[in-house]
Image 1 (cartoon, rainbow, N blue to C red):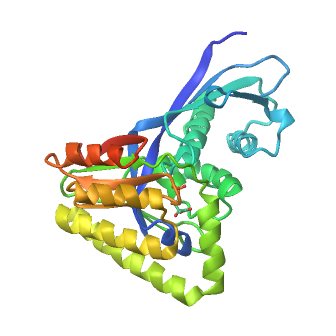
Image 2: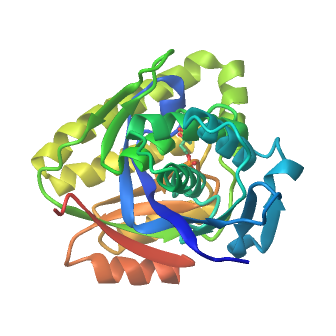
Image 3: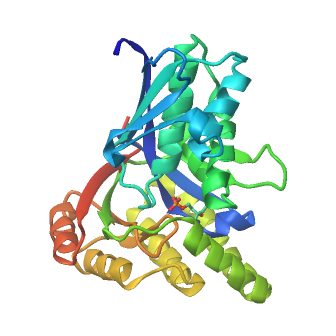
Length: 319
Ligand code: PMV
């Protein structure tokens, strides 16, 4: 096998600062890229005549596109190649790896898909605009999640802090967010893996049973997201923390929190965080805590003590 590398690409992880779930129902949300935690795709020459082959060493998996044409990854590659004008079969090996834990709310699926689309474009000496990449990845996310809002693929493809609001038809509202003063978040992982479609599907069922109740909750989330945008521009950490706490309370009422998440949220607040909330789909995955230099170490220790399997740190708006 010739391991000559034809192209390689990566894509960032993400966290949702506020507005998850309500964003599926056309309310705004704010998402942040995690530039230091990435998924990677490497394209090398494949076995002549075998077509496209995927290798996922993290999962111990290797499979041929021809054998699984309905697999979401296979469909992503097929539609991307079609978009790039490729009609004849290609003998390529695509190896995907990721530093992002799966089903944790950090955008692992969107990051892997984005890295693959970028690597395919690079292999063909083509550049795709973020909007094109995002659209390709959204179609793939739909296969996994059913009714994704589109925020994950958007923040990962653009790799910048965004305000996102879904419209009935694209183009959705995608605006860069102004960060007045850098701020630091700790990301605590519950270690509980929860596939996005489960809580998203559960919220939908309950919303169908009682739309007025959930629409009112989503409106309250939207008001918090709108205030958060203003506060991010001014850099008032105390108010930002209070808004994160309010969003957590609404997420609990929406029914997507969990005892493990709340243990970490409570521990972070008691140890001096300005505010804390779950991030992403919930029922597991990660939470975020807003800290400063004075509280970061004690909040990190408190999260580990409360059961966090991993604590990451990211500074938003620095450079
Ligand atoms: O995939 P996650 O865990 O980052 O969740 C995405 C955020 C949701 O609002 C829950 C779903 C969506 O499609 O926006």
